[in-house]
Length: 163
Image (cartoon, rainbow, N blue to C red; front, top):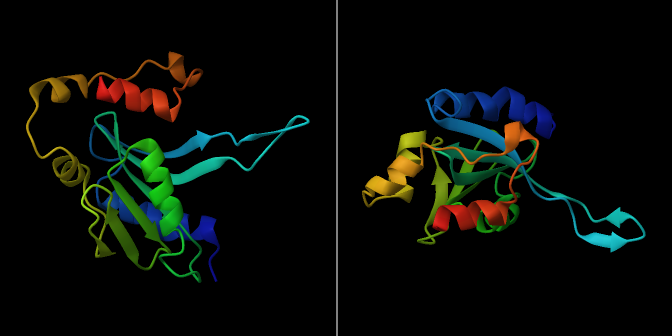
């Protein structure tokens, strides 16, 4: 059986590339460190919150994907995907084991099996159905993170997007 890392490398990553993620200009697939973990005291922290995949297009976080090992049920990561999607203010959450995909639209509450991952443009159009010239212009300007040495926290990204 394939473990989670092998499932990601052999099945999920190629499916995302096939949908255009990381290939289409302006699209990115990231592993997101949402929170370093709650401070417990005595120099210790709780387990950090890390999303397996965050799908970004035009500098907006559109979806979160939680991956599980090949032999796990494909919806096992759904609660985690929903929680991370809520924290990141991403509209879509997906859970997969590399064989099947389960998706949730966090705005409408619609959920169910998904045949394939949506393309960056499909996800963008579902997220932003109304045309907004200013949003589209600002979406082309990346948030300054000093070359990656000072990444923003998820709540800072949400505040900037909402402004």
